[in-house]
Length: 185
Length: 185
Image (cartoon, rainbow over all chains, first blue to last red; front, side, top):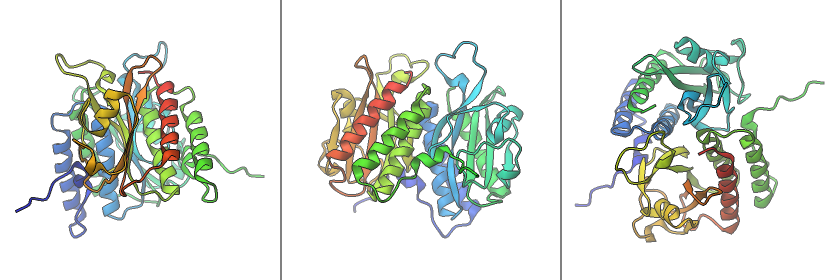
């Protein structure tokens, strides 16, 4: 009997009949499997961004950007005299700002505080940086490695106010930890 | 009078009333502007993947993957004794294979020959690597730097046979050159 061939892309096809928690559980299992023995951060972050995007799509959430900024310490050679900043990494969505100062905007605040930022309405966040004027709410989770060093942030934008609840945030924090631990920085 | 604020994301909003050549011309102008003074390859490749994706979407082409594989020479530290290979980089689309051997599949062939591979039907390409079983045609453009070194490949997949014509290929080759020249590898 012919067996149906499995492809990497199948990891982003989710059942429509499961609960949100079950879907996130499935996504995290897929993530673990994808990151297994893969240490190159661009590969893992790119697959993680895609996994989030299609999980949110299956949940019919109106997410318009799902991706990463990485710390400039990931550069092979650090530019002399330049302060540490966040640089655009792999993402799904429309073209985005390439550099963000640590401490600035929602991403920069997550990086400087090492605390997840949940912003129900970006217009009310002081110093919010708009890469896309249509974004209304945002979650940013810092990528903190086992030594406490911030390696980047996972950034998710949504077209509606109050786009994320605590179940979403818990999923994103688990995914951020999985991917951070898998990568060689 | 209030001026409409411009955002990075606007670079991926294309007019529906222009010809394909005009749309590609616009996309290349946006690309030049996005890459200006940006040398970090993950940022530039991520924005380039997004720009392609939304250009093809505006043209109603059935592109299901738009992104990059990079040469393992981009790693900060190269694993001892490991042969050069292609590693998954930034992309738009579903989760994909993380590593490809140079010379294997469409991507590996573009990297080893330094010649653009246009594959009207992937099922007829010897040794085709299927990350997504739905892909039917593919274009892969090598990223060759000014010294002739292959830094990676730009890979575009389409859900229909014969998905790309010579105008598409010309655009992708111009974009590949722009992004390769902009980056510090």
